[in-house]
Every structure is written in structure tokens, then in C-alpha cells.
Length: 69
Image (cartoon, rainbow, N blue to C red; front, side, top):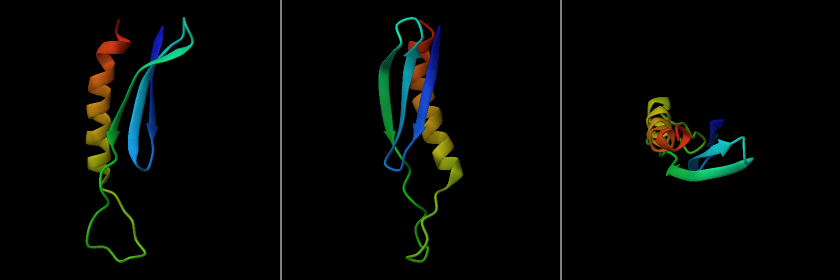
């Protein structure tokens, strides 16, 4: 049995396939975290949720074939 693990960090969105039979992380991948929204004041750091979802979806597309084996 396998699971896909996702880590939403501040620099990268990382993912891996967790194989429960061997208790190992396999096929570790990462994509850059989206850039902050520009034009905000210096005290603000906001991100477009749609961009986070798109990056996470891209990562899942890369990991899903590995988890299905």
C-alpha cells in the first residue's frame, strides 16, 4: 500500500510516495513555491491560492504514476 505525502513549505512544495510495506519514502519530488503577490506593502506577504493549487497539482501529477505501481 502506498500514500502520497505533501509538504507545503515556504520555498518548495515537496512530495513523496510512502511505501507502507517497506516503510520508505520513494520518488521524492519538489516544485518551487509560487512567488508572493507583488505590489503589496512591505509588511505584507500574500500568495495567490490558485497558484499554490496549480503547483501542488503539478507535483501530484508527477507522483501519482509512481504511487500506482
